[in-house]
Length: 239
Image (cartoon, rainbow, N blue to C red; front, top):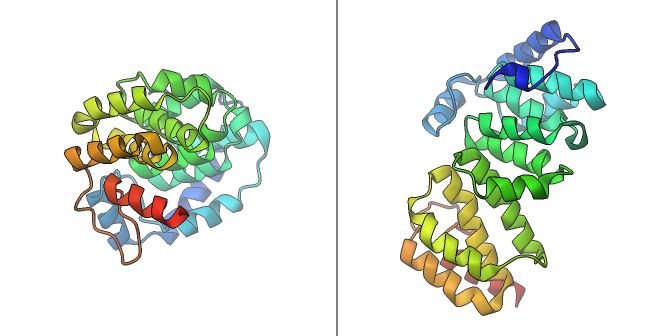
């Protein structure tokens, strides 16, 4: 992605960006970094705990458009932690839909994608239009974001949700989808089974047939993302 697509560079924060990177580097842990890389994160990172990343972000006091410009400068470094900080300081109503679309396609791992989706995308004024666009997209990160928005809409039981059409598509596409897309698509499948009793049996059956995350390791007391177990656990808890 061309950095010029992301910012007009009206502000000049080079030294401050270097200071943020220095803070992140000082908080890094080589063992954590190696673990992150094995889990799919890019090499350009320091291995900083997520809680420490939030602490660094809280120290950044820019507001509005200045916060956006600074976030985009951080993003352009390509550093994992710097991009995570960027997702925390962007104010959703200051970023254009075009820029957000570019950012979404430029993420390099699930952690950045999920923070961008959670802290910017879901609060963006154009999220509905972007979601419809991304649901048809072949880019894995755009599709992941689109399915995440759909998962949220299913949980809210939005009036225009069509559970049957979604189940048809999930049944066909989930087995061969990119792993980055499978995650939020699977969550949508689970949400349909939880929120729509009339479609619960089919959602569970699809989950059983595909078997995605069936052997997913979880700590004691936690619910695995394997849809049949997940649906039944949540439904039983509510009853």
